[in-house]
Length: 83
Image 1 (cartoon, rainbow, N blue to C red):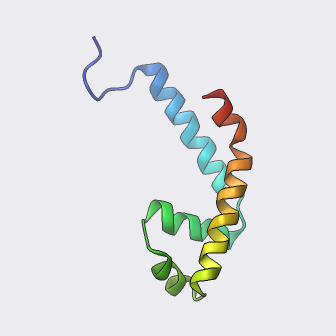
Image 2: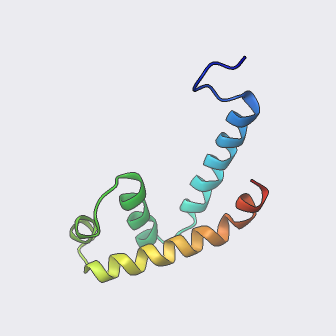
């Protein structure tokens, strides 16, 4: 029996590989897009907070996030299909 909350070795490896692919995909984003996506998805900041940090308008943040997510979806498409 596998203890509760513990991944099986194959699941842990799959998660580790997916994490590495996500990290590599994020590294391929344009710097402004990468910053926006990390501030939003990793740090959990609001659009307003990101706009203040990046010294731009909220609409610009929304645009950068849209294009960052679109690019990540494109880069990780095969990872989702194989999951």
